[in-house]
View (cartoon, rainbow, N blue to C red):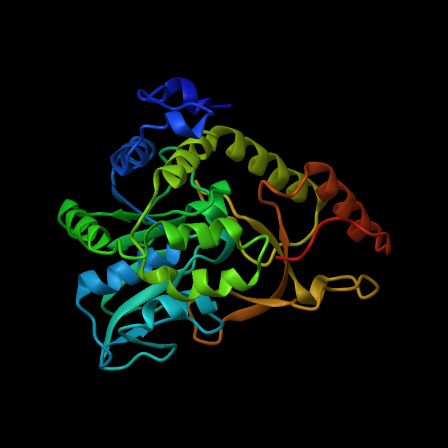
Length: 323
């Protein structure tokens, strides 16, 4: 296992478990991602949706411009790009950009037009892993989905010019301030605050010291997260439970997507499943799947119990919830 707190040249940089001693800045987080993925120019944002919105601003897209999205795209993606542009699953003469969504880490290879943006918000990419698998101009990561941070997203740019422009956009988006972050902290206790956070977050660019300290402490655990995820994937592979799509190279999935057709009839499915996973480049190339989460918040022993239940087609309960 790689211990990034030992090999990262600046891992001791003013960080303490006591938040009041955190003296880190946005640049420190970006330097860390440059260390992980040397062939990229990282830009730290407040969330994955803020990343997408900032890219729309950088490209100068307006309401008349279409952004190509796959069918069944999540609300947060649609919300982030619809502030200024028109999202659509149908290519047109007005298509100026395409978002390729690598859902749960599985590589999607869509027909695209205009600027290509790779949405890898829940893809776990090891150090020196496979970034820009489709050679997109941008790739977006969600730190909350990957590392369990309070907030945070990263735009990996192929161009330093793009990265510098995005940093200027972030700097101009500071009006929401500490109150917006407070809503994020309190949303678990007061769910109504979640509506405020999600509705305006895509326009945010303010990262308080508390958030930066939280991000820094958790991204240094990448080696542990990769080891845990690899063990869970190997457990599924050895179980013989079917997988809807080929595993990607040099990046790790966050859900084991079981084809709906292979799901045992006697085992109940969650009310929000099955989901749709793009399986090829055709417009109708979607398969119904039941995604089983294997991220860090899911215990290894629960996955073993789940595999036993599915393999034996029993009805015993398990703590694993559907993605």
